[in-house]
Length: 361
Ligand code: NAD
Ligand code: IPM
Ligand code: MN
Image (tube, rainbow, N blue to C red; front, side, top):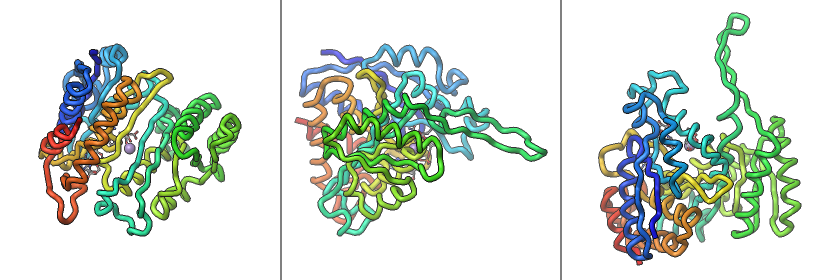
């Protein structure tokens, strides 16, 4: 069977980590009897360099024609990269937001799992992480502050910037349904995170989530204010199963959740629409500080490729095998620099990819 995968290598460490994920997909294909054909797509800084814009209609059309898209990360160093001399709507991040919107990728799943073997890389005390934890952040990805009206203008002689935060009931309902569906396959608990003590959009969020919850009597729903959630994630991450939240809160909480698992280099993600199509990318960025050195952790991208096999491509066994190979490599004591601890063997990006391939069976 042949799977058509769009590949956005992106900027910074993007090409390095995506190369490893493709290697792993090819190996999984050999073992599980499928064959990946890759279509290279340009997004972000790489697209600006060629076309002058971070996303072209051609990239969108080609992405839509694929079974799924695998992406590295986009963007550069805002201080030094020429991309940031362009107006905001032409910068790399604008391309990422636009492709999310164009492909209607409203559901962003970011699983944060503490592997037993990575306890040494987790900054929390051992009594907090005993037994590990496994939570799923369900982040709304095509609404809220990221997509509201934006302007900067003089008001009464003072420069003033506006960003508006809007959610309608339908946008809230569809992401809530996704969160409850996922919770049904997990430990049946949803923590909906908002700022309902201040924001109207959060009060509507709570009301709609309560309505959706009525269709899932087996799932326990709790509401939590976002500031408290940020605190609870480091106080007791084990309390969470599915965290359901809006776009900006999900962005911030997922970086926090990644660090309690050891590193942003471990956090995979899937961005899904109403169909089986999805865009799969690590949650972290292009890490310009370490780009080109061959030391980035490719595991988040490799685990994102596993999510792609599971959610978009009907290859559950291959996805399980990749996840097992990642666990095994960690058990065997191999680490990239970001997750290094005493007694382990430090390896670079490509070696980590090879070691994972060797363990796929
Ligand atoms: P970042 O996630 O790129 O880096 C933060 C820190 O984490 C850095 O120290 C970096 O070296 C480290 N890090 C990140 N990924 C790593 C990996 N795989 N292995 C080892 N270490 C890793 O965040 P930033 O520095 O705030 O942003 C850099 C650029 O990336 C910006 O242009 C930003 O807009 C962009 N960005 C893109 C995405 C995306 O494409 N989805 C996500 C986040 C940030
Ligand atoms: C992420 C990133 C993006 C976001 C940026 C690069 C626009 O931080 O995917 O988490 O904020 O969504
Ligand atoms: Mn982010």
